[in-house]
Length: 187
Ligand SMILES: N[C@@H](CCC(=O)N[C@@H](CS)C(=O)NCC(=O)O)C(=O)O
Image (cartoon, rainbow, N blue to C red; front, side, top):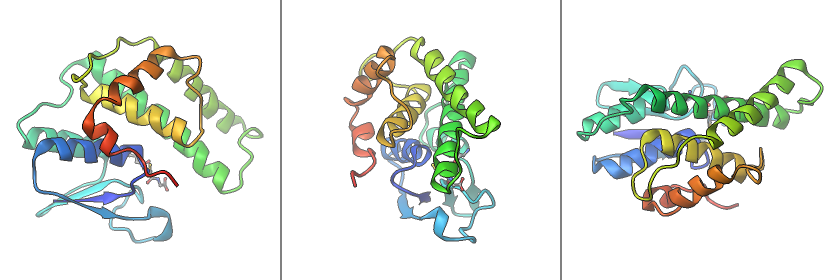
């Protein structure tokens, strides 16, 4: 199967990590989503996945598909799933602000982008209060929070200096070989 995406995207990172852990046959097709209007996905976003006749257009359906195809389960617990969703909302808001700023918008001058910034800070506070996984025992909610927080730190979108549990989560994830292997390349 083929995973289309960039090496810096946290959504793609979670999919790559799941694929590496799966033992399935797959390849990564690097794609700069911003340089094409016909990337082969209606979302105009990465990741997307092709497997024979199947096409999946979102990292959540991709991770679920990969886990289940390799005999594992995808987040059965509602509280864990909610933490996964919070991490998605965090990434969505932070990436949205990143792209708007890069396109020249003053994100402090707009009422909605100020709300997006507040959303990021509130979700970081909430995620910081969640229980931590044991080393070597991360689930998909833990991975999702870790890739999102690592992306925000990597792109200087937010700080976790006042969030000790999120710092600890990155330390725990930093002992996971696949989390390490999928880290965004340093410029
Ligand atoms: N809900 C999607 C979000 C994917 C997403 O936002 N990807 C970013 C890269 S990190 C993207 O392709 N952005 C391009 C754009 O918004 O134009 C998923 O989970 O796969």
